[in-house]
Length: 192
Image (cartoon, rainbow, N blue to C red; front, side, top):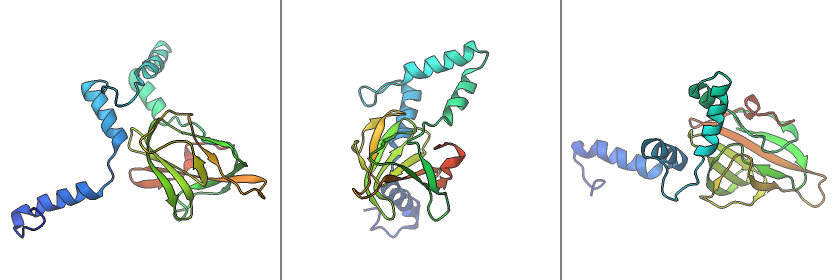
């Protein structure tokens, strides 16, 4: 009914409905907001509070504050795979390519929710994980071990680097998206 109406008063509502139906939903951010506002959800996502409070108390014992602990852990990424960066970040590539051993395990860089598994142009089989801060990590040229809507923890195996039988090494694609813009992963992660 909203989209069929030609009234100017309904134009802002049309716009809001269109945006809501065409934008990606940030499950991880909503979960984080829910936990912060109402406490732990009932069996929706696993609890991570025990680890967070342990990290915060360790920093406090060392003379820091909870805010410093949060800031320190906010940009703390795990290395998804070790190897040599063979293609660096550009506006066109949006990520890096890492040469590694065939069939190497690929790990999640942060806790998050798997929101996409499928083929992406120039990347091949891809897994996208959405994190609580709204960022996304993209893992490409692999075959996966996870399913859409799986919750993964930092350091958990997500997939395996794929390689042809004739290749000595595997090739892995990795990208980070923050605020809907891709950033250079080398600025926050060392693959060596």
